[in-house]
Length: 423
Image (cartoon, rainbow, N blue to C red):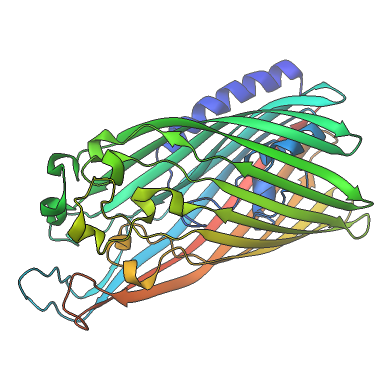
């Protein structure tokens, strides 16, 4: 493929990405994706210390100077299965919100998620590139009036990052990178009329259509071989400052505030033999920085109105994720991957009522993948990820004590493929 053909292809797929992501929603590590590029997906997200493709800027911008001239375009087919179960009948007591007993599964089971990027070597010591990827999201679409408002009930959150990157070697096998990030997110909520009395702005609480938000942040990273065959990688992404969801100023704290939390990743890659590489990463997502996400339902629902600075939120806790991956290059044509990740639970059992809308309870992923060389300059990459079923159970906090419990359950499948061009 020529450089001009590659440039045309990149312009095309970058434009397509925004259209596809407008219908994509997903959740793995809370509402962050566990991995962005297809190669990293085959390693369950491990890879901060191993340069592989142009989506690496999403994890560590320093990796980009080691991947050379390259284009990548991938599609993931994502299947999240989410449901809630209410156990126990409503008490009917004044001032309570007892839900209808039974199990309700969310509709809309499949989503398409693109990942794409390009990298150009400016010289032997530096590179410039750009990556476009979905940072995360959440979708629920329950075919019922869960909170006795309109039907369906649910939310849809989509996040898209555009990430230009500059990376430079500071030694033969060490580099630093920086990625200014431009972000877009879209949100919609339906069926929350029961909370109107608790809202500072009931007209902008629910069923107001899609709301858009824009913002920015930065990711910095380091990657280097500190011992023979032993690489270390580290990156930090700042809190993303986003414009407010004005259409949901009566739902989210701080008048519709929904910034994107900071996060960091550190990891190692050990080349045990020329064919075998072992990876281990630790990631931290600081959900507690975002009031609309971290504020608890109670007592905040009783002490402040929804939409105020201390208005009720989803009660999410910070999340730490551990990822291990193994990569085996069995020949010049074939490379095989497997990985496992496990994260801490972001949703306490005291917060199950509001998190019917956002049941991001997944903790464990297992993944496999492979790359096959089409020729000397083009590769096909595949990955399959299974997020194991996870349930969080707790009392309905707006019912009489012991009257009702709510179970949130979620599991996921993801199948992904990408095509890579090197020149």
